Length: 297
Image 1 (cartoon, rainbow, N blue to C red):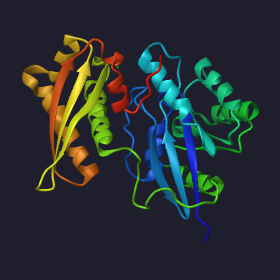
Image 2 (image 1 turned 90 degrees about the vertical axis):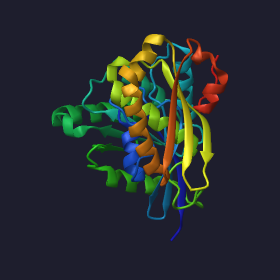
Image 3 (image 1 turned 180 degrees about the vertical axis):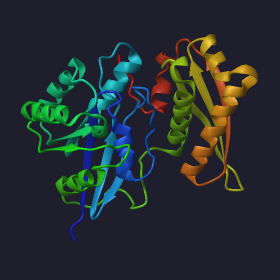
Image 4 (image 1 turned 45 degrees about the vertical axis):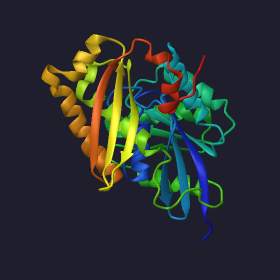
């Protein structure tokens, strides 16, 4: 059979479920997921196999109105994810109101030349009448090749969507080995896992003024790996929240992150976390490079 391979840019507003969908298509976790919006920061590729097709899924940051340098870099990464794409998959939160922010995003996507598929996600939590009305409106605005109704979280409809993508990417050789699921380095994946634990454990206590940087990644002779990470925050009060009473919160963050990193890498992990207060961390060009973002003036 003829092999196929293509780049699919997964776009959407913050918290539309893009990362959950990419993980579901790949069949394992390659992108961090959190109930908080704007969790994804950099362009990250998940690699899925569907029969003879290899799908290169670009999980992009949510597109929103940027207010600071980090926001601008994230939005630039999102639109940059469409460059060279064979197909755009626009993910819409079906249970959310069709707000002006989402409408502006749809208008922007409509002006792009790439073929488009609309994915109405979280349909299990939306009334059927509202779904049909939303689908009709999006059909008129975008004229997509197809509209899918799915729940990325439960997996409902994901298999059919995956097969549709496989049939639409062009013929050509695969770009990655069959067992590779992401283009992210182990250093980047480790930092992302720790950042996810910050979101999951601290919820609304910690704003987005934080970053995780893998400073050292050492292979040990026994096959394990030692990872030293720095958590950078803007204020002492934020550091106190992360560290917790007698270091208990930081210990728990490290314990859960270490276990998940070990599962992802398939080896024992020794994780060392350090929290640093740096009010100007968002102005560090090197940090942007390390977390996979371009510097935006």
